[in-house]
Length: 113
Length: 114
Image (cartoon, rainbow over all chains, first blue to last red; front, side, top):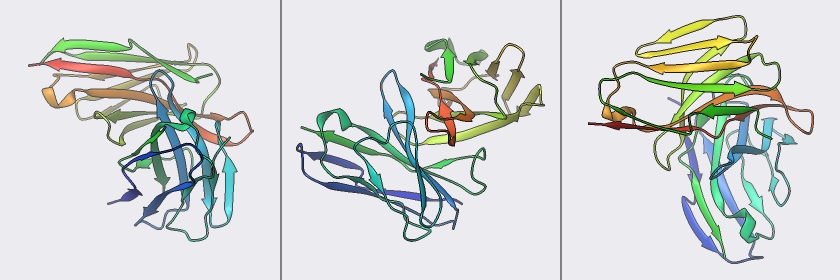
């Protein structure tokens, strides 16, 4: 069964302090993606990756970076977090890529003060 | 703007009743999916319906798709307390940057009253 592990699950930080949210998968799937979920806005895609060293922007990439050096890991980097990045973040993977079924991690709740 | 919009935003029904949620979208799609999210948890895939399909079943779930109206519905029959969750539709569409992605609606919050 697909397993997507995110860390940390909860984090409170301050404006400008760089942080990384990790995402790892156990399925060797090629497609990985990051979403943020905000009340009233649903889920919005931040970045996605079709394979190692292949990444591209989603709808809301500003303020975020990603890397895909290994197939199993897809970290989300906030170089200088701001309060508007307070959100619930989800990593998702897909065996077939889009439009296949997405498997989601349990989420990382980030608060930027 | 959101590709998919669910209706209603919130729905409360008695256990045992059927629950119907609707999703409307704006642009042509290849596929539409429904997901469930228990409070604060990750989303779980329920069902995928392709644009050339009109209806699909999975257990107590029935999904219909009307591409002429750009709408879909999710019916949960004989609801149970465990069905209490938020339900999202998701469509594959081009993003603002021209790349393919899955776009989610804002969800319907379903509450099953025991």
